[in-house]
Image (cartoon, rainbow, N blue to C red):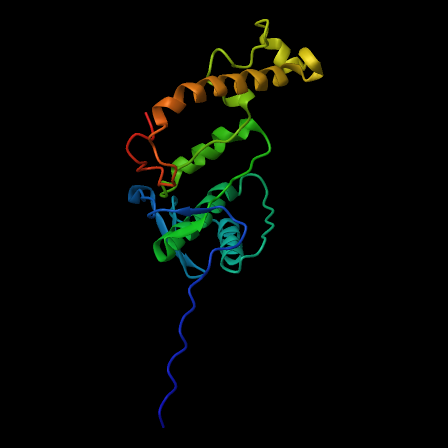
Length: 213
């Protein structure tokens, strides 16, 4: 009796509503990989000799939710290594998707306070995965333009933090207005230079000639 043909494996489609990344898998620093574990069908590289039981539980929970496109709520006490576990599990799954499909959801790591940024970046430096990373925050925290900065129009840095300023919006409102004005000036200078560049999309690593610089 002739056997029926095996069912064709369906290609996983990107999850609707998510911002996706289209690029080659990012590199791995093998010297930081002290342990390799396969969990939920995903090989996870870990920066220590052996994950703690709590870290293993966190990674399995995260990978299961990613595989099933579900929401995962994880609670773990301070000092149990949950940050490393979250980063390793999420990045391992993302890198595998980039290898298989050439696309994967973008990862956003939210934190409660600005002071936690340094600790998250420090943990990211420990793990084997070397993804492109950007720190997103308000203009008040990140603006590098000395003409905009966090100063109030009269030059008082304290006004921005104290919430005083013109129009009831405090220093932040003045900062936003100065930032928009600076962007407008930059755009006006940029337009003649970029008028011959065709509007299109491209990889961050390889923009068309004349689009940058």
